[in-house]
Length: 98
Length: 393
Image (tube, rainbow over all chains, first blue to last red; front, side, top):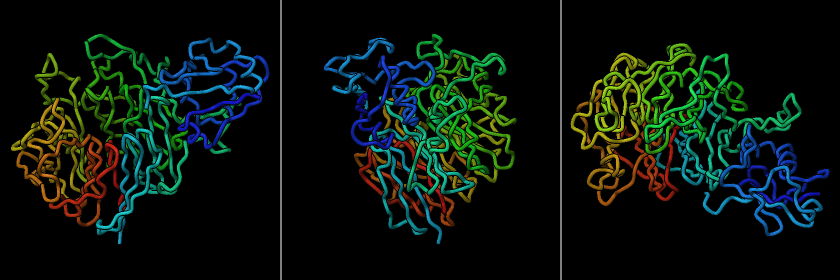
């Protein structure tokens, strides 16, 4: 089980409160997390990454385990603690946005 | 008695202001989509409870919202359970998917436009500036976007397809204005359903007579001596807004970057009607609901000083189709006022005594229930107002 923390505006858009949990098979990567997230909440498509290219939007950051994973490959496995649900995968609006 | 519903888009959310026909007592509902920029909201003439909204954010990009109950509830089109999956099993979620047409079937769509510095840049979608619902079909709606292009949805906003013929109208010479390269005005002609007018900053005005397949620039008579190397260029002019009276669609009024103009031949040619305005720079322009020769503008001091001349917020009215203008000041701030009224932030209702509405970058929305003679604030302290539309119910 992967725990995903969304920014407040995306929680509103997806009509969820608190963390989102996703059941994913190994390997868990940013891509598999976002694929599953968008499959469950299609209104989030295009708000985190581009519809077509899947490029991360410039003002979105990915954090986990006190690390900035924004520039890691979207196919790089996430830390085991994220894959196991011990630590959440944080989707963050950059401080410069808004 | 009829009612009015005013749809206000601001830098930090949308507000819906409602009143009976007297337009004296108002109910304020909002913010909807709090924290997001609402560039534009508009109701369907064919179904007043069908509303469309453009919601954007530098963080999360574009979202399209739709209401089917007059603004009480909203959702992105295509995200109801029955809409969720496409034929490939993936979620649709395409209501915010604006992809420029580059298919072979459309010929050779242009892939670059002029940038500020004169170099060519690829088209890049940024946001929807304007949503224009069809006059007859609630599920058909047009979107004017930045970088400038026009999209159409015929399924209530679930999916969008570009009308690429527009960018073929010398798109390589279009360039951004200060607000970006945006398609901000869409006028539909009730008498000729295949005819539409649009305006782009900074490209000019364009017309289609075949429902958007082909377009031609309609900028003859526009002069931009301080903005373009050729002041009479066919495209490249910074048109800020155009307006028409539905009963007389061949007559168009334009607020350009500088100059207020008029066309009597559906944009075939334009002539200046700035007359005695204190400044002919401005953003919105509107036509009285029942008097096709009565026109309204809000003069702004200059292209760098985006506030009213002399610190006085004045709407100017011409009852002669231009050239002769009178200042409308009663109820509007007449000292120390340095707000702007943006291009989509003036609207008219169609009650017997025509109402006017303006929204300011200072967060005020003013109403006049007597054609502009006197004004009152509906609200004073909203976030900066980006757009104002009104529905007469």
